[in-house]
Length: 78
Image 1 (cartoon, one colour):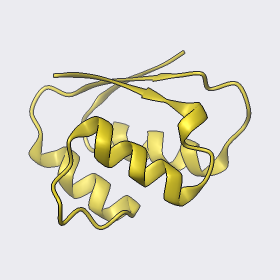
Image 2 (spheres, one colour):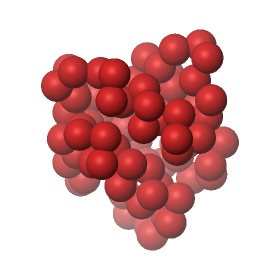
Image 3 (cartoon, one colour):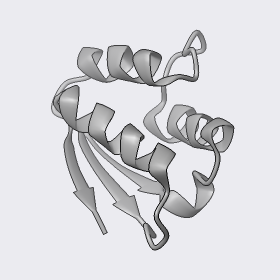
Image 4 (cartoon, one colour):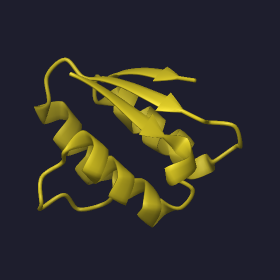
């Protein structure tokens, strides 16, 4: 499954997790943290994630991307 995330909608930790939940279709019980993101992603099969509009250095978003890659998602940053 292919998903497109908008980095502009992920400027804060809370905004990032709202956008991740909505865009990736994460379950209602999603905990809104990096451990929960990892757990949910490892349950998904053949995940391709494209992150668009990554213009500014966003340390939290960089951590999100690292978690996505560690969980086995194919991540493309534009």
